[in-house]
Length: 379
Figure 1 (cartoon, rainbow, N blue to C red):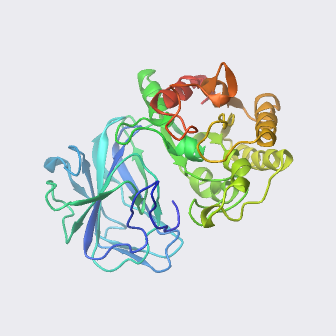
Figure 2: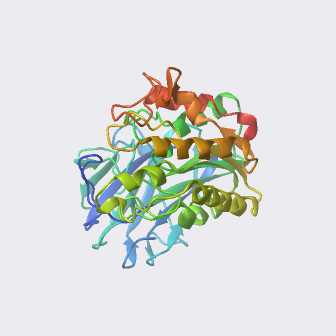
Figure 3: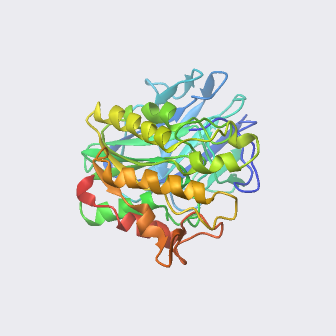
């Protein structure tokens, strides 16, 4: 989850700054594990006032904002149809019976009767959220849901129980590489999506949670891109139920942001290789204290980006951090995204055909290559 932030040319408009009043919001997500019962987690961690949720429901997605009518389940919170979430807190619904399968899509609908104020949200998604005026909590049709954005609001996750529910979960934690920037919207093309598909095909009961935040850094906060990784690691990884492993990709933005301007990247001090390694070690130690495996991801190739992210000095630092991730022995396993994406003719650049139009982030083929490079036995 992130602080409310205005939309921009890269991410498009969003509703976070104004929030909601007398509206219903429907959000479609894809499950990575199935079960017989589920609970929905809602967040007001960046709210400045209590968040009144007048109602909530979940059902099977039938495409866009459509929901299969016979699948809709109203959610309760401590037996009540609504809840009030204090600022800085989260709420988890009571468990509801709804058998689900891995890789199917659900629609979560929230009803806000009173003004919410600015909304805790997730800025970048490759999915779509829909908004309707008035109470359309259990509406199966799409007519009222005439507005949409590519962001998620107050929805922090779904937890499955019973049936085929996984024995443990792997969390992918990091920056835009994890968040999926460059993947085709609406196609479930992030590397975590492809990893989930590999696990299902291998009949491994492991859920996959994406805790990536585009723009995130290991060592510094951002007003637009969220808390530094060291500050959000506990909330997004350690305190989530059933986590057995975490995949970590961080450091690219720490290296590149000192060359960028604008309020979103400040503070943007230069960081050293030693500081980055110390930051990685702190995450590893915190995870190991909870008996969570940690898989380190090498920093992707940076040369060729359309924004000024690369210099010979930054490349030297990237190579040094990657060498430590591969050989330092601190991580339990390594996912070598650098080698999976690198151009054989110039390893400092991404391979042609594996890179998005910004020259930096993977495209669908690149994300598929990263997911294919993961050793499932390491999870």
